[in-house]
Length: 570
Image (cartoon, rainbow, N blue to C red; front, side, top):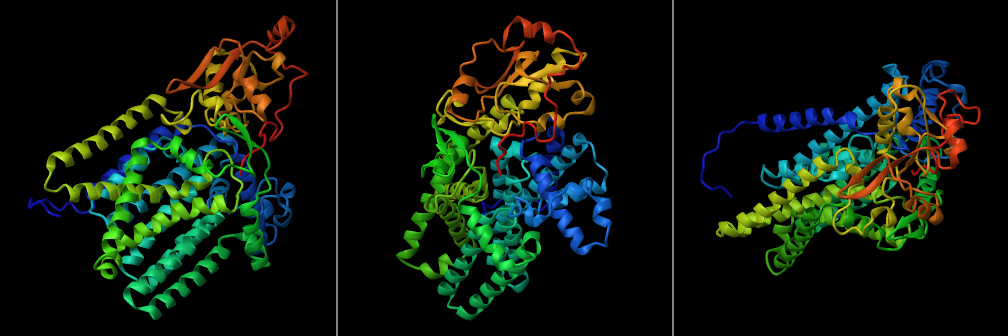
């Protein structure tokens, strides 16, 4: 592997500098991103669980004094979303209350910092996982591949639901590589911890538990050490179950019955609705089999898809080669077994969702946890290119040069579309996007509309309405002085009308895409419209005269909690 050159050993300095730079860049970009419609719901779920936990373990009366609005919080057993994991949301709420972040602006900013820290921790684990099975430089490459994936980069700042799962999936990949390099009891228990954290964020994480047990079985067959691997597999399974229960408050009572309930709810979730997919409305309980593959294919940068696919083919080729000679010893290596784990997670998870007709929501965010495994396969492709063409520097230069050019281009694209990276689609997506897919289904860019309206009308109350099914969270998370000037009213009385093309049904989508007014503000991503603001009311001159005054309108709808949170997605 060495080219004979003597390189200075700088120790951990380069990696520390690398992550310090990422951290600084992330903290600089963090204020640019908005709030999703799910975040208030996640805080509610955390509050219900915190009430339950403190009532169980804290002195009497402490919970009521610590949690605002304690009396109005329902009991966990009666709460609709009681089967949601809160490994991220519960500590986030505790920190928020401990620091006294009561204003929504402060609370959400603190929450976003914490989400970003979780994701940075996940990237460090991904870095170490790659370095455990590949040469040192590939740790940097896999992190850069992640950072240059627009949707994942953006959601690392505000998606505490799905990106926390990704962070723990990265941790799980790292603990697996440690375990495969040194199958000791501490490493078995550490891997059980990462598995439990993953499962308690999203129950489909049991795929990681099952696949790890399969890896123990494969290693036993290859090494002949049946008793050792069986014992470690048993310890891992028992420790995982204990930790899953410990970190999931709803499972503290009637554990096995509630575990069965959570699994039942996983495949056929209680939410019902329609999703705009490939230009038509589909029931989220009856999605076509290709829903996840298509969403992965149209939202992942094409160069990463190519690397992942080539890595898969090269791995299969290697397995076939090993099967013809010297199979047992060569396959029982951390790299081969980690890649086997990665490919089983990707294909096993997607096929299980298809086979069980699991209900899914907008996009593939519920399956984001397969992405670290896809990136590892991409890194393996680059590693094979380097070794296969060691004697052909021209071919190797062309392959790596093309990869570098694609990465640089994606970096430029992300600069151009910032801060709307979360609505990125690649060239495979049908156009116009808003007529074929749910684009900004979380309303994560609507803060840009509110900020523009406030700049456009620098004084007085700004009356606005939503033409589309937009969400309230971005508004309540604005700075207090900005939030106080915004007043949501009925559209005939509004000075501004906001449209992000997200509707309730087919008729809604059609109407939103056919609004004839000329937008005063327009957000386009790669030439595709994502968000628009129109001036003036939607109905006639009478409404215009009524809207001319800044006085509060008696017909205005109050900003009651959750008023336009809509059909929020779990």
